[in-house]
Structure formats: structure tokens, C-alpha cells
Amino acid sequence: MLTDLPDYDTHEAVIFVNDRASGLSAIIAIHDTTLGPAHGGTRAWAYASDTAAAIDALRLSRGMTYKNAIAGLPLGGGKSVILLDPGQRPSAAALRAFGRAVDMLGGRYLPAEDVGVGPAEVREIAAETAHVLGVAEGADADPSPLTALGVLSGMREMLRRETGRADLAGRTVAVQGLGGVGGNLARMIHEAGGRLIVADMRAERCAAAEAAFGARVVPAEGIHSAPADVFAPCALGAVLNARTIPELGARIVCGGANNQLADEEAGRTLAAAGIAYAPDFIVNAGGVMWTSAPITGLDRPAVEERVRGIGATLGRVLDAMAPEETPQEAAIRDACAAIGRR
Ligand code: NAD
Image (cartoon, rainbow, N blue to C red; front, side, top):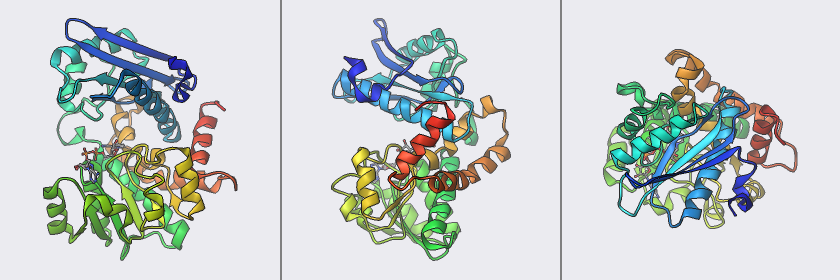
């Protein structure tokens, strides 16, 4: 039963969408709308099974509740997944059918970009519904520079707490993944006087960071163990797990990737190893602060100011951490308090 899955966690609604004409198969998970309409991107992915897709939607949707609540946004948490066959991309007809399903929900769920759903796909969805975020055009359409700015703010706070000095000058940061978030973060660290160790599956991205920032390039499978002041995961989820934690080369982990902890145990293992962890959903909220600007009514400078405050939010949550709690647990408790959940 879906409701038996641990990630179900009292979701308000889970909607299965099927459209025979276009072949669309999708799941929309609405976790909590206490603070406002559920917001979280749409992921298009070839899942191993329908259950794997449902688990992903439920897990990510709950994470969005926490992220939006801690970010102080008038938004709840939701997420959707479009189920694909291996090698398939979502067709325009399927995206339009998905848009009609979103429209049927009357604004209770607001989709946006995610893995496999970029600006072109969001435009197809938006052709059928006004209830979608992240349809800005041009340079402003990309939330990743603001996500990186928030990660940098969190990184300064972690350095201040752990070493007594917040600035990045002379620090070494190991950045895993040089896409939208990691690439912008690497640039910002370089501009702040930091040294970089980088890895990406795409050799041209590593070469560009080497040329532009003097970054040292290491193989992707070894970046977590590179000796550094901070390890910044900016690629995949579940990078902090039983195998990688004992190998970590930094005492601080602060990066933009979603769901960095493989499971709850990973949070405890990190703490036991004396590694300071910045909960991902606090420090990577800069992007959603920007994509939700049509809801908050904030302009770019006002959003940037809020994003620069992410370090202070992180500090407040870590200050309130109980002795037996991990940073992740303290962050979830803080988010739940904001929405009146236990
Ligand atoms: P992206 O696709 O632009 O970049 C990801 C990069 O990671 C790519 O260059 C890819 O080649 C690289 N990569 C993949 N596997 C790797 C591996 N094993 N080792 C090293 N590099 C690897 O994605 P993005 O938008 O930069 O997002 C990165 C992470 O941040 C994701 O987890 C995403 O969910 C999260 N995130 C992004 C935003 C945003 O604003 N874009 C906001 C919040 C969270």
C-alpha cells in the first residue's frame, strides 16, 4: 500500500495521472499546504518501477515542505514525477496533458523545473495552466546562481562556527559537480579568494574550471575524499552514505545538491565522525526563493538579500540544536514548528 511507505507521512493528497492519448503517466504528491500552495518541481525520469517513482515523489515532496517552510516562503511542499521509459523524453503532448492535470488542481500545486524538465518543458505545461512557477525568460530564468549564492552564505556560516573565521580567502573547497549550481559556486569561491578542487563527469566543465579558476581537477569517484576545508556536493543525492562518510576529506559538508544524506543513519554517522553538516534544504533554498518571486512579490535585489540571509537562518537552526540531535533533525524540527506539525 502506498500509505504504508515511510515517506507517505500524512501527505494531503497523492494524484495519479494517466492520459491514454499522449501516454502520460505521472504522480503529483502534495505533502502540506499549511503555509500556501504546494510547490516543488516536476521530475521526468525512467524509474525502475512505479513504486520507485512514488517513493521519489513522496520523499521529494516532503523535503519541499521543509525547504519552503525554513525559507520563510508562503508555500507548502509538493513534487511531481513523470514516468518515462529508458531513453525517452517527455513529449509535448504528455507535458500538455500534465499541465491540464495541474490545472484541475486549481492552484493547490505549483510545478516548476527539475531533472528532465527544463524551460522548454515548463513552457508546454504553462500552455495549459497558469498554476506553474519558473516561466521567466532570459538570464532570469535560471535559479542556479541564486542557489549557489545561498550555499556560499551557508558555507561562510559553517566556517565561522567551525573555525572562527567566515571568509573564504585561502580556504580549499572541493566541489562535486560543475553544473548550474556547482559552476556558479566555484566562480563565487574563486572570486572570494578560495582554492578549488573540482570533479564532474563532463571533462569540458572541469577543464573550464581549471582554466578560469585555477581549480585542481580530480576523478569524480574521489572528490569526496580530497583533503579540503569544505566538501560541497552539487551533483547527486545520497552522496553521504556508509561508504563515503569514513572517506571524507573535509570536516565541513555544505553544498547545493538535494537529499545529500542517503538515510537518517548517515546524519548520525556524520555527527559521530565529528563532521559538521549544513542541511541541504536550508542552504539550497536560494533557487526557490527566486522562482517563487511571482508569489512573494519580491524583486531581484530583495530576493538576493534574503538569499544572503541563508547563513543566518542556518546559524539559528544549529544554535537551537539539542545535544542528541543531528543538524538534519534540528532543521526538520524547525520546519515542522513553522507549519505546526510534530
Ligand atoms: P546540473 O545538471 O546543471 O549539474 C549537475 C552537474 O553534476 C553536471 O555537470 C553533471 O555532469 C555533474 N555530475 C553528475 N554526476 C556526477 C558525479 N557522480 N560526480 C561529479 N559530477 C557529477 O544540475 P544543477 O542545477 O547544478 O543541480 C545540482 C544539484 O543541486 C542537484 O542535486 C539539484 O537537485 C540541486 N539543486 C539545484 C537547484 C538549482 O537552482 N538548480 C536548486 C536546489 C537544489
